[in-house]
Length: 384
Image (cartoon, rainbow, N blue to C red):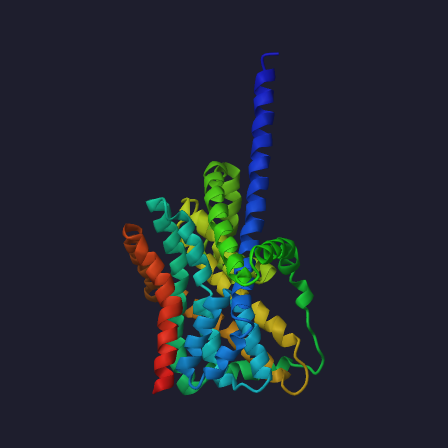
């Protein structure tokens, strides 16, 4: 009889824990859906003219900027790289498409940077979250700085990609896009908010969809952060460390596998931001996981390439393989060399510390780096 209250208490705690994990699962689903909502909103707001941006790519530098700007607008490197694969199949030179692929890598980092703003009200959390998000930015910018000049002068990525494309390409359509289960899973939520936006005002429906998406991100991040503080201890923390915290190789592999499954590096890296913000994982643990996401996201371009058949199929597969080779090579070189590995971490820590002292810097960083600066550079380049 004496043990009865303890048994009841244990049952209540177990029930409470289950409810909390289910709540997190629902919030994660909503977070993933909100990323899709923002992407759908940007696509609609640009009226499907994203591919028209690529017509202005008259040189590799402009191609890089367009890749950044287009991906930041759509918030999906998967969409942009798929468009690029289609353009290459339609006649866009591979040499011009390579800088666009590199630009897409930089542009896609905007999503998890926006997600980190959900921690803005708590200084220490925001500093950790913003650093874990922007380490992705610094790494991808560094990769471009190293590989773009080499590619412009010697074309190693194009040549290696072309070699393997010639080996593997076939004449049949081998599309396996049906493996993407995230899109149909999140479609009901996206459709619901799309209908709500249209009901409020058809003229600004796409912009409302963006606002709803951002609002859900803030709500989800806030609640997930509070729940993780209670739950990410003991066995739960050990389980997560088996996936991320066991070492850099495991972290890279985990990031790649999860991103292949969800076909979105933005989603994968965004889900890690709350874990970093709440202090569950350190920046050095999140860093390799992010690099794995860079590798895993190349699956989308490869899937898009398998949908192309005929004489242009080899070029479509070539640019998709370039994406894979580039991202993998960047990880091996930058993360493999200690002196290079530390640079993105130091840059992210410095920027996060500065932004935590002045929140406007974070906003100016996002708007300036991903939109204003690329736009100005495109304008200036086309005037020369």
